[in-house]
Length: 208
Image (cartoon, rainbow, N blue to C red; front, side, top):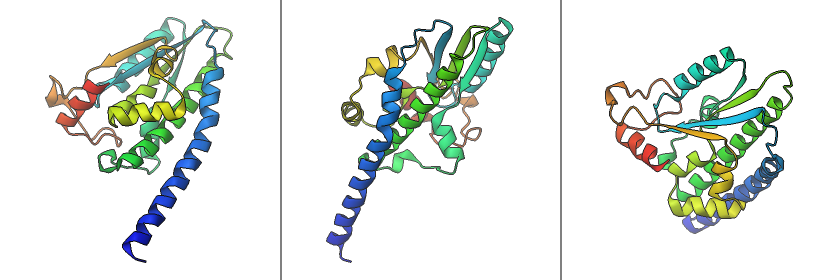
């Protein structure tokens, strides 16, 4: 197979994968739109920030404190970490723009499914108020692709920033990466999904 044939074959495979990804993503997107979140007993709090910002530690502390105050606390795990722990340790810096968009679309689909599932379960709790703590949100992917590509992704999915951030969460807490000001505490070994250097961590944090 010559170079032109291989290129045509790769393009065909890429288009097929993109079409399949769209088909898988759309049901999750529609599911997210049907939630009205009218039940005031379920509060959604998003924790975001750069790598090694202390989100996991903060979530454990917040969860303990809220539980002692009488809340039922549900913790949504980080979608990227779940993927990486499942064997998909993919360094996004090496992606082509097309691969980056496909990865972010898959990640967003998983994030939506996780958030919807936890909120839906929380709505079943009738004996106590519920807080859903979310480790990273739908807008976090914007730090890993260009602004133009992120806008193209939102246009392709028919969503906007207000839908992905303001409507979906009751509160957003941004935590600054340890690489910015406390770099001696920055550790890339405690999370398999963390591969960024200190400089890259600061850059990602500033983009969130």
